[in-house]
Image 1 (cartoon, rainbow, N blue to C red):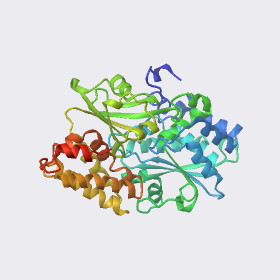
Image 2 (cartoon, rainbow, N blue to C red):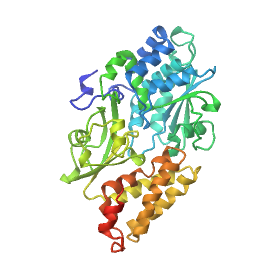
Image 3 (cartoon, rainbow, N blue to C red):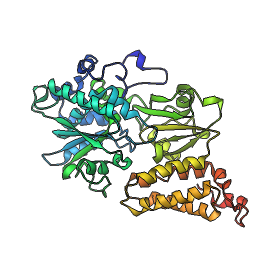
Length: 440
């Protein structure tokens, strides 16, 4: 791997070619080893061997859920159906997140190659890239890459002179956040309303038009070719015990160096924010960082040195998500931050289930009252109860995670909520309320 792509704290795997090659010239991609992994797979590896290599690598989905990629491929492959599909989820919608967009704009062929490898492994002959229409440059470069790959026989029929045929088509999304959920994405691909389905059955069993379908996101696919060429042992040597490889984070907010950072799993937030990110703007005090976008939660200074991986973030009330990371300083009010993320989730709710459709609306109304200093202790009680109700009873991940910013800010910045309550001298006032009702 070129030295220019590595630093003591950054290691580029998913972003390995971005900025180094011309994304509109397939020969540039081939010159750095492009399509070598696909040729290796089709010439020397069985479907099961490919799947075992991905399983052995420990690669987990980079779209937020962290489901083991090899296991998802294996489940899809085992379905006894002659028609299967593979879909790339490029519907990146988190505020401040632009990881997938950067990969598609800077290295589109790596996604095409990875999709062909995945299609071979599961037995699919057709693939789709579901991309939001708001990404015109990424779309143009994907269209160019697909055309070039077809011209060289790297997409289409009898790839590398084998019996394997595979082609890719673009599907455009209208920017609905809920379509990042795989069943909502599939419904949108079919021309239906973008809303989630009840599970099971899972897409690996019944997906696009009822056929077995494997859905992975852009960053997940970007890791596949290099795992094949460099080996699963190499990839598994990076990261932590349960979270292998690297993760791309979009660093934004009150930090000096904004942009993308790809680091090994297990890197601490302190390293990302203060070493790579250059610390807080204007020399102000760090207050919190929101990871996982509107689906995540805030992380305070006491957790800055926890190694970042899927399990550690969940344990402290946040999540990896797709990799958005927004830094806040001492001037930010955390109740307003929670309201901002909740408003986003409320607006993006597809409306199919009542807890999300109505619950997020009522939760937002209560927070709005509180931030306008018109809220009471009863409103604060309602916020706490509604948050857990919406989280526990919503149909899909949007509603289940929408209250996370509220829950986490109530846990770590309870005093900021109390400071906005107008009847703080209520008989259940500040001292007693702090002791008895602080969220755990």
